[in-house]
Image (cartoon, rainbow, N blue to C red):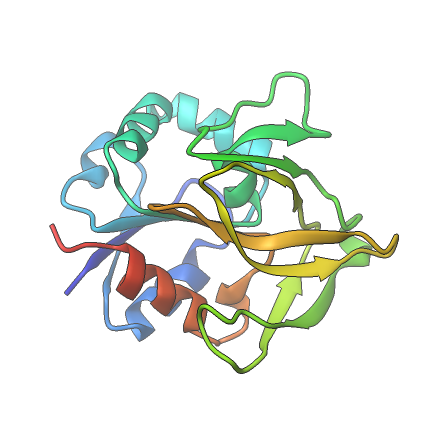
Length: 199
């Protein structure tokens, strides 16, 4: 069975735990350096990206995570996790740090405030031909993708512009939305089954 860590410093950790276990994998909390050992993959949950980044520094996990991602540890980041994994942020705080694991630019809170949260059906052909009900909560979107990053799903903003909301490179998967809140396991299964190798 694959062992998938969930960064458990802040955010919707429990929901990702449940999704991992319902996919038939072992879920493991990551709060300290030793928790990174023997993982087949890691999930960085939604929450507050600036708070999570500061807690990574406090818990001594910032550089070890960067090293692990450079060494090929598969990682999936949803919402705030996507912001943390990007190498550039628009509308971030002046002191905001990212882990820089995937070559893309994201816009923080791109869809608006909490009251602007919404649900939308997305087509994700690489995962399935049936629509996926996506939940967006103070969500970012992807402004620009690097050459090695593939968009898997996109949506059209109120201004009529198309933005990617699900993307990947070889070892990093990111989403603007929260699949862990839907009970639909297809995004988690894709990450665990297709992107995480057994150590």
